[in-house]
Image (cartoon, rainbow, N blue to C red; front, side):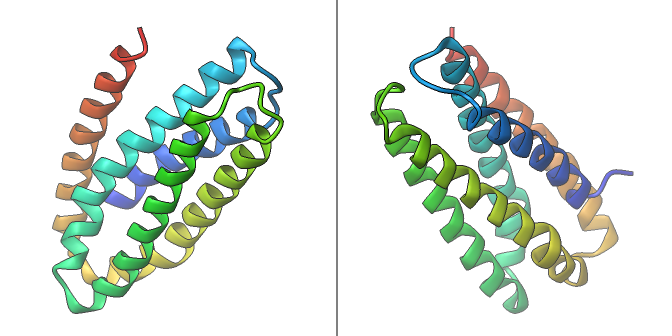
Length: 153
């Protein structure tokens, strides 16, 4: 049975891969636009599902409150960077630096989750909750991936 941690890690791997590819692009190219949209959609679908089926259940516990606050603050920081990147022209010389900052923020957040939050959450959630949250997370993640994929066309 898949746990919430394995489900989240799958998306984390996709995020790392897309972030690595994005910062290798240059200028106003179709490749940069496509990778940025893919990363943006991945981060959005992941964050919505993760907030609902990982962080909100953890917020219901005293011991989960602090890690949750910190993680949600980082989600907000990533949202702001994505918005700034969306408003900048792809050819803007500052675009790549801001994209690198976004990718560093994403990497930092994923590392913290995988090497800190997951261990703490593992002590808070029961085995049954870990499996149940994984199913709910997957369903929500897929729903948002589909809705953001169609908005690209």
